[in-house]
Length: 99
Image (tube, rainbow, N blue to C red; front, side, top):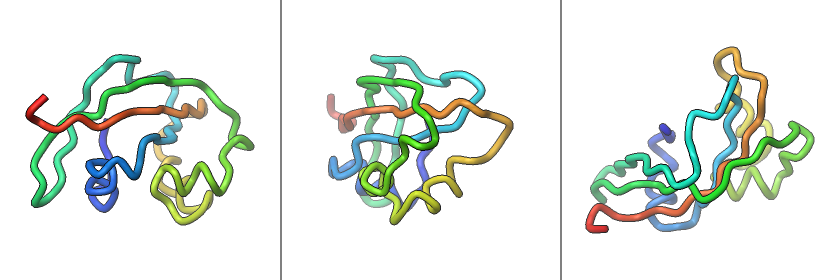
């Protein structure tokens, strides 16, 4: 699971603990560990705690901010790429490389 470079330090700090993805099908699984590297911080993993399909209308300004974006429009600008049409909310926690 890839994250935009500017979000990575906030993921590492725990400020961001979820992401919204628009995919054809889920690309991650609960319990899965996915690498994250942040410049100057090193690498660790996000561990998926939950994944659920939601509607586009479920994406609120609060959810956009929790995901690291200023607003819903910015979140969707990043999330809408490719041919996917299923919206997934993925909750995760960050674990540093020493775990």
